[in-house]
Length: 90
Image (cartoon, rainbow, N blue to C red; front, side):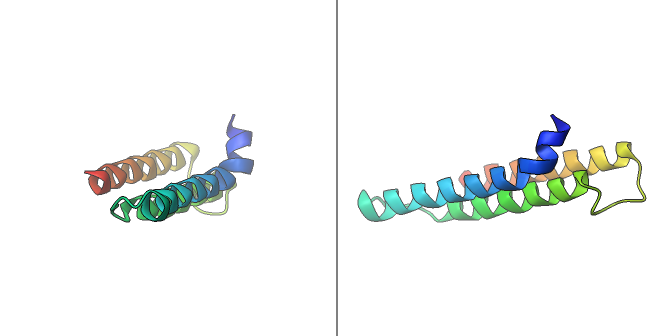
């Protein structure tokens, strides 16, 4: 599973960004419903976090640290991303 994340986590984040953008465009312009643009910000936040986590897993960042520290950083990034996303939604 870790190898899959090393390869495809950036693409998963990009897919979430594209899906969020398409939902925003359809709701805003096709259905004519007023919508806050926070869904776009959440998409950018998720793609950034996913790409950064992918780079940590591929040893591009934090190469001198142990796996325990890298895992703690990944958990911290994930927690911050979920927290900010919930803050933007509500």
